[in-house]
Each structure stands twice: as structure tokens, then as C-alpha cells.
Image: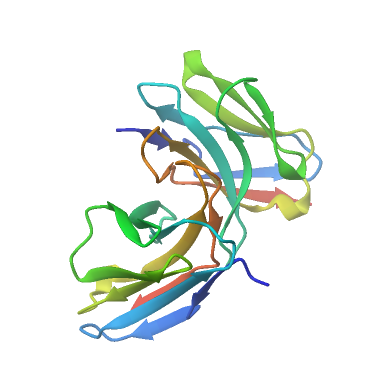
Length: 113
Length: 113
């Protein structure tokens, strides 16, 4: 069983569309994250939830909205997609005190045309 | 704020040769330090971590890293590289009270037969 799973793996869409990426973890972790990896492989934190509470909200356009229906799920909704949103989006989870081991999903490659 | 620098964007080594990937961090107190590896099309996997104690830490797949406070470095080493080690390697730093890691820009390792 995959520990952290994201869907879809690939997402190709037109500018201006709205899309969602889903993430689920079956590790029983209490913290989940969204990271964005740009074309230069630079990874940047976007959001983090702990037990469904938003605890990290970095400088991200408000077109991006995370939603955590329960502590095993963290979805990312993106409104009015722009060319610059093209990237790989990684979901991750961890348990316990801050900065514990992160478990990553395999990523969602988003291409905005 | 903490930051991480990986000076080498791309390194090529021959199979069987030794490897050292450099990582320098900036943080006012004792940091939590990590090395992650990303294989093509995959998420990141933790290789090793340093929280405190012995400054030489052992990880999976035969990797080790040494924390040198005086040099603000946490370099990753392997005595003999295997072709399967070809991947992208990320150094990351964490800080007390912050539940997200700051990643370096990565070093791509290529292994020649």
C-alpha cells in the first residue's frame, strides 16, 4: 500500500481553469504539507496542516486554497490557473514534533498551457 | 530565517568512486539537518538526519553525513557509488518551532559506468 498517494499524477490544463489535486496518507500522521517544486528543482513549502488545522501558510497567491477534511487528507484547489503555476506539487506527511521525517508522495506534474 | 546552499548543481562520478555532496546552512541556533534523495518521477526519500549528539550520522544505502558547526556544513558522503545512486539529492534544514523544512536547490548526481 502506498503511504502517501496523490492524484492525478499528471494534470494538463488551460490558463484560467480551476483544478484540484488530492492527497491521502495511510500512515496515521498528524501533519500534512504541500510543497511546490519548480523547473529548477527548488522545493518550497506552501501549506501545512496539523490535525486539520492550518499551521503554515507561506506567501502563496490566494488562488491556492488547501482543504483538509480529516487528518488523513489534504487537497489543493487552484483557481484561475496561470502559466507560472506549472510545476510539480508534492504532498508530504509527518508525525510528532516539528521537523520529523517527511514522507512524500510521488508528485503531481501540473502543466498550464 | 534559515537557508540552505548546495553549491554543486550537477556532479558526475564513476561507479565505484567516492562521493561527497556539499551542503551549507545558515541558522542562528543548532539546526536539524536532513538529506533527501529524489529518483526520477518519484517523491523524496529521507537518507539521514541530524538532530543532536554524534556529528557523524549514518543513513540508508551506505550514505553518511558529518555536521561541522564551525563550517556550517553538513556534507553527504559515500565511499563507493553505485549506478543506482544516480538521482537528485536535497539538503534541508529545520528549526525549532517551525513545522516545515527549508530545502536547498538540489545536486544532480550522474554515475558513469
